[in-house]
Length: 430
Image (cartoon, rainbow, N blue to C red; front, side, top):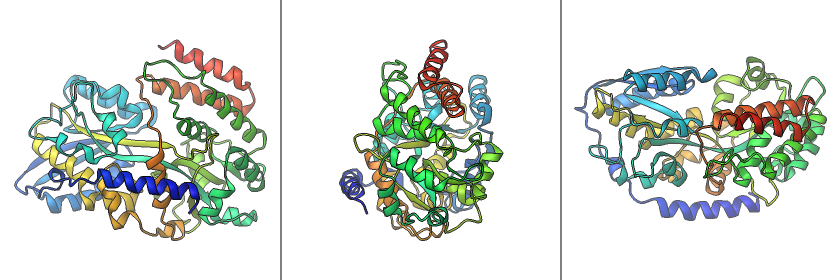
């Protein structure tokens, strides 16, 4: 374990010890007499995750029927359907909120206040990661949802490709090798093959990681656009270096071609939250068990290697016809040990519920990663990450920034030109 990881792990252990107050309310025995049918709205692949969890849930609550509906995340279909349902009073009993939707959705009056009886979430909300608690708590104290999972980020890499290039494959050695972003580019030149294999899937991964490492969001707490912050210019310059060296794939992120590239061995590394491992295992690279490893992302100036990438939340709508059953499902989903274990080991979903960090199941040697305990990466990352500032125009800013990244990668705009255009696009919507 590197010195950074050891120091971070020590801080993580101290912080966890302070947060492990007994979650008495969360651990109450289930009331098997609660009955009825509830609807839950989410998106792929959460719909599959929930479906797989239901047999375990029904052992605790045999008389509750859960109907799960997943709306595609593409083109904001889920968000649009949920907003229409909330406004028209035809929404579900229970709904998910992805972190990028939080600023748009959390202030809506249609959410139940989980602080109030009979929920009383205030009695155990401190058992969730502090930044997730801040995301679900309004200025007046209302708790609109419970945190489900977080997205501590890392660098997923192909051990076999690194070995072929004559590079180390052990996670600790890869972490040392990719010490900073310039080192990442130097290593990428040894890995990439023109029109055949690339070091990185998309330049957006570099920008998002560098922003998070510096604690810079699209907007500051006062709602000011931050595209003039030096981190955006610096990150796009790294993207340009990587693109000029032929390290970035030509595939559009999340497109079928992009997804297929992982299973074909065309992508050597990818930087997202720990949840990306679930996509590799069950969708993108199902035949590649043992070929992947996880290391820390390259460090930005100042030494930070932590970044958050994703996370989601789950709440109850006031229009729910069976709030008792809805609450039983929500609380069980995000605090029950068996639920969290299954989500982590089957779908690589990192629990926001901090007492889970002391469980044996979160520190297991995963065969998909050649027996690596990837929590040795993700736990210190979560302990050191800087929370992002959420804004209702985050989606617009993200789209504008992605266009800027693509234009730099394609060489149709300089870094300054791309940022100026992105800034103008977002300013026009403010």
